Image 1 (cartoon, rainbow, N blue to C red):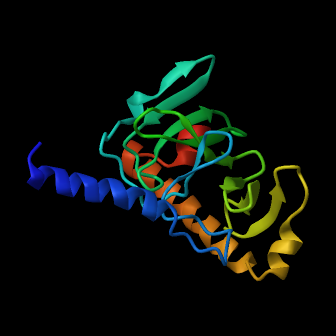
Image 2 (image 1 turned 30 degrees about the horizontal axis):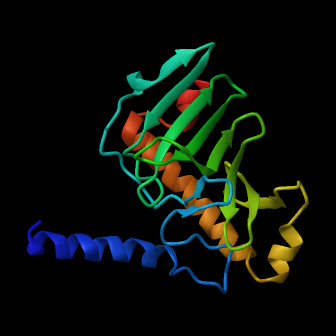
Length: 199
């Protein structure tokens, strides 16, 4: 192989593992700069604001089975290059789940988001690799106010997050992720998530 081709390839290969290790250890609630593998073999990722799809699917790309709508956009770039699989259970009290997936294989990452129109909430399911714990951040859909955080055992983690001074950053990050996901959906499918679910 030509040396001019090999050197950039080696540099890129070396940069990838280094970028995965460059997260801040001081605030383990923050997302790392790139998706990280978890102990379960899945990956954690957080959406970047206003992710856009290179595949540009249309609303007709949803498949229907037993009344449930599904669509996969491996080029969604909702989270540091992550794709997304969307599952919609339509109806006035329906839900939309955005499962982040590996864009190469379609395998699930740990993180997902649920827009629940029955109780008007947004739930961010987020794995914190530094702690080896998964948290659910619940926010009101209408006011974008964080109402609670629970750990993977169902324990209320809101007070410990407040005591460690992380509530405001959790509030801001969850609101940003909710807005980015809404913008992605409207830009990609031409309707809001709520219109697609409850329409």
